[in-house]
Image 1 (cartoon, rainbow, N blue to C red):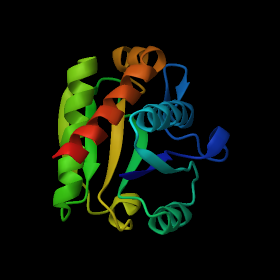
Image 2 (cartoon, one colour; image 1 turned 45 degrees about the vertical axis):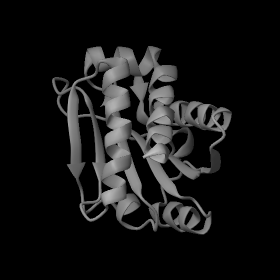
Image 3 (cartoon, helix red, strand yellow; image 1 turned 60 degrees about the horizontal axis):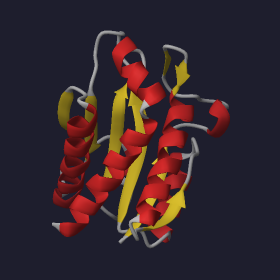
Image 4 (spheres, rainbow, N blue to C red; image 1 turned 180 degrees about the vertical axis):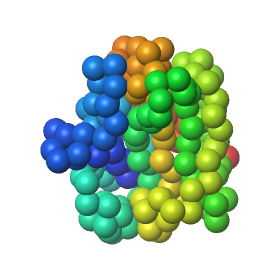
Length: 174
């Protein structure tokens, strides 16, 4: 199995750090978690063929499509009003394999970290999951502007990464 990782938003937050809250920036959390996911997947014998953080969505999807990846995972943090919390995974409604991958990752995160399970969200409009040629998901780890979720995003990045890696291996075994 070959995996392409996409930590959300611009490297170093320039020009777009993504969502910000509770002293955190989405670009930093996403990159840290993606690097850890790469480490755990590699240790499990899964080949990571890309770990690309970029604001150019066309470049990301073209690079992923040319990489030979079997699955695509984009990693993000959610934000809303400081009250919403939990984990959700965005999937393209036409992808059964994407739904299966998303379910595996969603379950692993919510079970391991105890985050609120916001479920799978069907998003036909998200460029990175509709323009890739392999099963693709966009993981919203937790809400960066919720005090409790922000503590998890700050202090439990290793657990988020392990959960995503386990979700990938669960998917591969099904």
